[in-house]
Length: 188
Image 1 (spheres, rainbow, N blue to C red):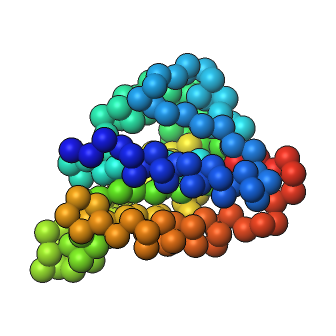
Image 2: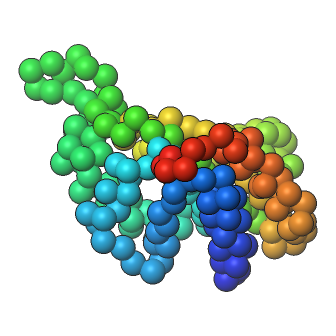
């Protein structure tokens, strides 16, 4: 399996782009460990969460799932959401409406699967898109009151990598969603 160099390079590209545009950033490398309360604070602080991850076995790596279980569950104490949004006194409130973040998120993924395997009913994913595959992650962010930005994906990284073109696409994706309009001190 890959050693994570591509995902690390994408993180560095994003950091360079965003700091050059005047955004303040805070980074977590899940595999290096983290403090749960500090991570909840980062979520509360951020206007946008950028999740850069490989897709392993058609979902996020287990290390990020562990992060979600630890950090996001701890944040259900009112810091990231007020339960599921419903109350015993008013069970008619919509499930999943308790999120407190009112921010955005962007998912950036790397796949061994080729792009052609998505959005085509004759291919492996039965016509499903990348966002369909990542639907549970989208729901988790939504649960905390976060709205989606356009997902970015790099495909076929093991057998037919086109890294230079993918880096150009990533730069353009960042430029589209994080323009040079940030004032010094805007948060990301």
